[in-house]
Image 1 (cartoon, rainbow, N blue to C red):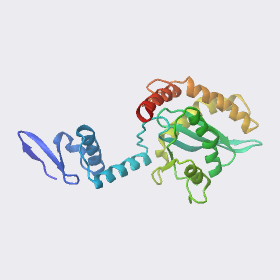
Image 2: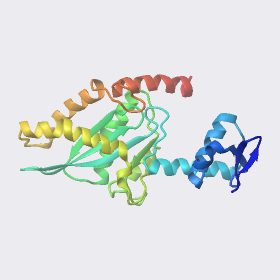
Image 3: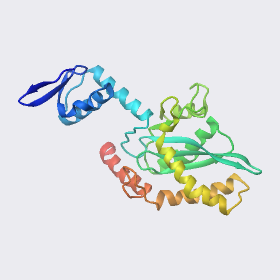
Image 4: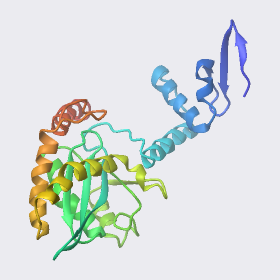
Length: 257
């Protein structure tokens, strides 16, 4: 690619797409991904009509971005992030795992404890906590982002979690291979729940059953969702539930009315 001068205003052409950009963007166009980003901006700005190959490239970029943790979320329920968190080993109980679901828009969290890490437990969190909650709020759950753990991925016809998503018409996006840390929303929540709930709770009390620990976790989640302010992109100092309710009004205005 070569730049040229027109009235002292450098121009930068992108052969891949056939569009010309001012050279103020020049240093942001050195790779295909950045050129796609520039094209997205131009589409939004000028409403240009894209070819089929350009539309396909933008759609692929969107999926790749989400798989790498760069999440675009339109409303509550649009995309949920699910992950497994190892809580610890308890005397008389054994290993305890937490299934976590965080709404990527509102940051409302749902968690349930299990003594195994399987596709059934991953599906059970959605069935017991997540989908009933969104049904009560009259919001759809459209997609879920997970890592590539065996509790989430397998042959669709014989994998309990995959079957559950298919039955409920929920799309499944997976994080980038060998990069499970790209499910960053759950990673940040796990750090919060560890520091603010598990560490203080386990110092004060000896838990003898999963149910006992679940009860205290549910109390903390009620505080987290309804009272604790969040500084995330959509929350901006509001609580997750306040953000969800405001987002629901926006969703109804755009997609229902």
